[in-house]
Image (cartoon, rainbow, N blue to C red):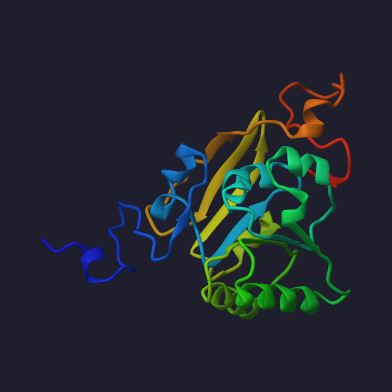
Length: 230
């Protein structure tokens, strides 16, 4: 019997994960890597991270892959909070490696900046926080990402999961006690209805935050400062 993947890399059986057509970066989490085509974060493509709220562990989820970029620049485009250099350094991300980009008031300015960064191929990773993006815009960014091997993640609201996207990998992220629940909205492989719980080490400020006695023990940890330290 001829296997689909031998005919074309874009083909796979419905009960198996597809072989990634691009190089992948190790996620650093064996349980997660086992659920992704190619066994890691695909490079040179759009990855949709759909979060229930900001600061639930997005950066800690990406930290192993970012730390393995061999000091290549990491661009933080339109982050929701001021980047906290001390906490990011504790995650193994050197301040000199990070580029914080704030665009103008128009959403189109940020989208233009993202496209230019991707096409330049000068950065190891681009993390782009964006509330809304049209399908045409997403296709342009996905195409721009394919011109290189940048780790490109768009962090968008969970509600965007209902919208169409050219991203071959779309994950939903929800807070859970001790980590996050990862839902597989879209992947090249079999459908998975149950989320994957991934334990995460608390962020630097969370480890030193005073306990709130009015907060249930099962509530997810939150940053104690309005800074990008998740």
